[in-house]
Amino acid sequence: MPSDGFTDEGAPLGEHDAEDLLRGICFKTGPPRTVGVELEWLVHDLRAPGTAVPADRREAAFERLRRLRLRSALTFEPGGQLELSSAPAGSLMECIDSTAADLAAVRPVLGEAGLALAGFGQDPWSCPQRILREPRYDAMETYLDRIGPSGRAMMRSTASIQVCLDAGHEEPGPLGYSRRWHLAHLLGAVLVAAFANSPMREGGQTGWRSTRQALWAELDPPRTAAPPALREPRAAWAAHALDTPVMCVRASEGPWTVPGDGLTFREWIRTGAPRPPVRADLDYHLTTLFPPVRPRGHLELRMIDAQPGEDGWMVPLAVTTALFDDPEASETVYRALKALTETAGPVAAPHNPLWTNAARYGLADPELHAAALVCFATAQEALVRIGASSAVREAVAAYTERYVVPGRCPADDLCLRDPENTAGNTAGSSGSATGNTFGKDLRA
Image 1 (cartoon, rainbow, N blue to C red):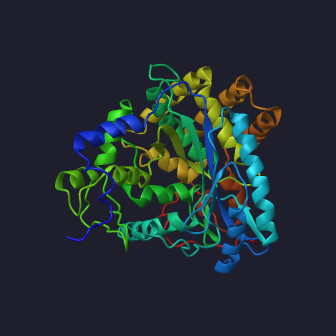
Image 2: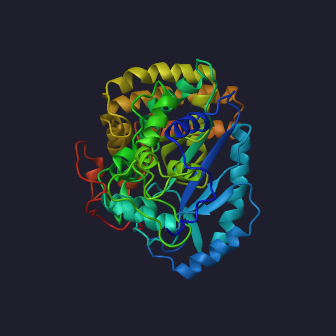
Image 3: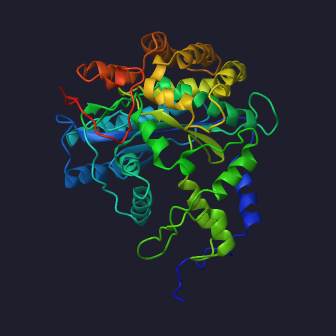
């Protein structure tokens, strides 16, 4: 039998070994001390944002960016989105300052090439061609194409802000890992609604304030759902990871195999076919799981749309960090949100009605609006206690006044720029995020 090239990666993984690994590596506990952020940006032509950027021009600019000395990790997504992943920082302000410095270095290089960063959760102009031709993305596209068109749209045309926070203490309490895991899911729908910024696709409104979030919900429900038993995160996550279908089986040469029968990782371990999985396969499998909160030793909150403006990303980072890392704020918000989310029923996020309303209506939903008012007021007080600068506090206050108090989100600004299409402004509008779009060019 020909070798698959992975015989030197260790012994075949047993089911109990996999469960133990998952419980041990996904929630690393201790006092919350570090914060990080992953910023995804669309890259477009500076003067004609709706025009496709030629591949050679884009790659020449990216090659110059790769030579920069940055603290953040610089990577690129399949559709050419740029991602900066900050180094773990010891405070909110350290994270903001280091990431802002990296962005200040990146923007002029792109500008010299006639390119710019755009903060939208979903590309409002077009769905770019996939520029990364790697076995991982070839296999991912093949797998997701079997489910529907949302996969290609997600890979090529979406961008987000991912806030990364420590898992928390082992012991119970406001900063305990179980409470923080639960809080992340309670708060998630509010963050979707308050920062919704993707109502447009292919030049027209889609009927959603956050088309990006709607795409994720359609993508592959077993892969994008949160584990149902949120109060026991280690056991719930281990079971969820093992019982999610395998997206692909890696190979050292040639294309990666895409199982066609819904093979779960647990079944792969038990059958040993097409080859016995090893530890590296489990590590890779975890990178193909896309729940709204992903435990990676720390907690990665993945539900926030990319934001407009050069510094718009700072507000969701500051608000989220304040609500998690200040004990008083964490307890206040947990109690305020608990009753709200219980009304949404037992369906796991992001597929329950509360998350759907957040993506469709933003803060026009009355319950989410009321919750956001509590969350932003609580965060504003907590920012002082966690050492946020006056500039950051003022930015959060301005955002609260502009959007949260009147029950708006950045998506509403885009809807107002396209007044002839009112699908995104009409309560009760329906339709798929992957369906036909309509309307005037956003550049108008």
